[in-house]
Length: 87
Image 1 (cartoon, rainbow, N blue to C red):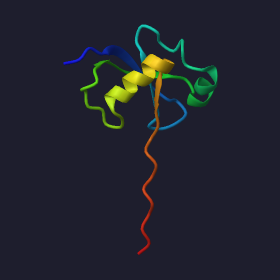
Image 2 (spheres, helix red, strand yellow):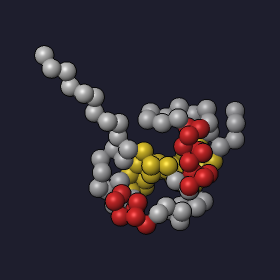
Image 3 (cartoon, rainbow, N blue to C red):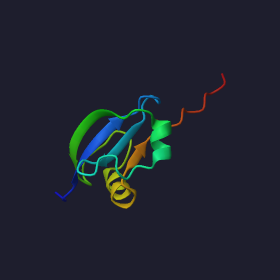
Image 4 (cartoon, rainbow, N blue to C red):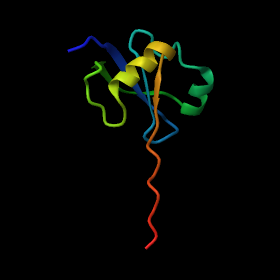
């Protein structure tokens, strides 16, 4: 199993099914202020040890870890609704 990092996940108070992943030790320090304004009050949702192999429902763990390392955060937004079929 590869090494990972301790991650804090915050739920958006403004946007349903929107989450912000950050390094637990850094918290929100590297998240841009403009993003936090749109995100709303971050509500703690989960803490986990994230490794590249871990399965996540909406994202690849390796991509989340890479974004946190490079930018200080990973923003998970809900998937786009599927196009409705006309019948």
